[in-house]
Structure formats: structure tokens, C-alpha cells
Image 1: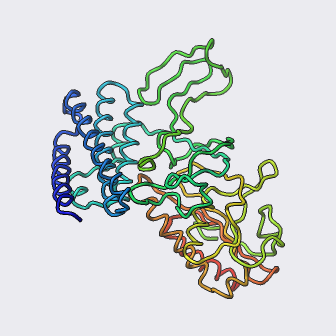
Image 2: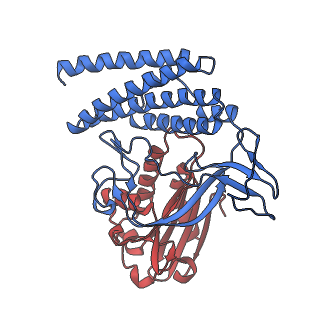
Length: 252
Length: 161
């Protein structure tokens, strides 16, 4: 490791830990929306800079540094998503707030996997599952089962069966994932307590002949028979059964 | 019957309910299909990582995921593993092959789920050929990742009955 690289990383590390300390004080709903937005933007910029170091480490095949930077990047992204969650809640958009909390959870989990940074996790501690219970109603999750043809590997872009990368593992700061299916077919959707994707939730429901009830707010929303198919006999639900975003860390 | 697992034994037809012929399973370790879709065999999407994990740890699977055209993915919070078949000859050559492969899978899953929210279970089917083309034992496991290491004991216990 060159002297310059060592000094740069040391500076970056101090700035990272200082940012975490700042978040322990400012990352809460009492902070003004303006300052939370500033904090979220500041975290996003910091994360983008960390990503550049990660990409450079990946190019130089420095796996330890690349994984450390992935851990750091995901930690900053988790904090940024948490700031977004508080902003959405303060602005009366609980569904978006839920999505931001799930993004925070996923990034924090990957941060722990990529580089279990004891110092960082001792400075800033969060139990996102408890936060879910405190801030949101108990949600019903949905789990889809589907068929697909063989996909490609995010690490090397070869057909997944033809390379040595194992889906779910981290290689040089990047998570291996199978993607790029040409054909997909739905099999079923089930209600589950533990979903793969916590963004797959029921958002609203309605009894026959009545208006929709938003699960987050409890408020009613008008049902429009001209635009929506009606069912006069059975209760109806509306929600998310699948998302197609790349999970954190799967794109370098 | 174990709380986390359903254990059964019998002939090939009684135990191996998947669309596969005994003649297809010569010697070795195989991943079996879960069913068929439009005449194409359907394999769990986790067959690919399991195939690579075992192969990279010198447990050669006598079947290539290259041949699979159709995978079934279940987006539940649990891990839906493949059906793993261990032939009698491979067990006699390497008596620890079931223990070792389940240990490899358990380590992979512990890392995969590290730091995540909620309780994550593993679902996995293990079929052991006890005597060539005659007696088979099947464990349908659905429980915590740490419990995967108990499967060999479940197989042995059924075998000694």
C-alpha cells in the first residue's frame, strides 16, 4: 500500500466515523425536514465518493479494500435512506417511507456482510425491525413464485451456469446475482410473514361495494368502477407482488 | 416425526416422487427436479449455487446445471433449496459426503442471511440411497440453518430402524 493511499484512506476513515457521530445526533424525526434533506444529500455524495474508491480497488483486484468500501458505501446509503424515511413520514407519505426503510435495512445488512465494521456499528446502532413495529402498522407481505430461464452473472456477465461465481457471494466489492432472464412465468402469489422482499406488501383493501382503505393511513380512497374492475362478492386487495430493482451491491 | 423435518423410507417409487427415472441416477450426487412445466424439468433456482458450492469443494455433482432450461424461484423469506440425491456408491466411497455438503450449504446460508431482518429458515430435501436400487430415505427439512447439520443423524436414525 502506497503512503499516499494510506493517508487518503485514513482521512476518509475519520470523515466516515465523524459522519456516523453526526447521524447519531441528527438522524431522527425531531430534526427539521430541511436539515434531514441536507443530511441525506450529504450522505449520498459521500457514498458516491466511497463508490469511486471501491471501483478503483476492484480494478486493482484489491478485494479487502473493495469489500471494505462496499461496507462503508452501504452503511452511508442506509443512513441516507433512513433520513429519506423520516422526511417521507413527516410529509405524510408512509408508503414511500416504508420503501426507504426497507432500502435502509437491506443496505445495513449488506454492510455487515461485506465488512463487519465493529467501530462503525458501535457508534451508530439501529434495530430496523423494532423501527418497523413502532412506526408502521403490521403489514401483510406477499411472496411470488415464478419460472425463469437461466440468467447471467453480475460479476462476469457470462451465463450463470458457465462461471465459477456463486449467487449471493461478494467478489471484489460486488455481490453476485443472477439476472437478465429472457422468459419468466408466474406460478402463484402467497401471503407470508417472512418475505424475500419486504417491499412486497398489501397497500390497500376494500370490502364489496365499499371504498378502498389504505393500510398505512387507515383513510379511505374512492373506488372508481369506471377505471377499476369490481368484484361484488369478494374483498379486494391491492399491493406489490414483485420488484425488479437490482439489490444493493449487485452493481459495481 | 421431527418438528423441523419429515423423514420417510422405502423403495425408489415410494421415496423419490420427482419426475426422474432410476436409470438416470447412476452413481454420484444429483440435484433432482421439483416437477415439470410444459414438459421441461423444473429445478429450484438455488440448484445453481448449490451445484457450484459442492463442486468447488470437491463434491462432484453428476449433473450439470448447464442442462437446465427452467428454474423455479420462490420469493419467500426462507431459502428454498434443491432436492439432493446421494447414490449408495458415492456414500460408500466418501461416507462423510452428506455431512460435508450440508456443512458447506449451512456456512453459505449463514453468510447470506447475516445482518438481515426477520427469521430465515432453510427448506431442503435430502435423499439417501441406502442399498443400490432397493432402499431410499428421504428427509424434507424445514427449519433453522443451524439445524441442517442434524439431517445426517435423521438419516442414520431412519436407516437403523
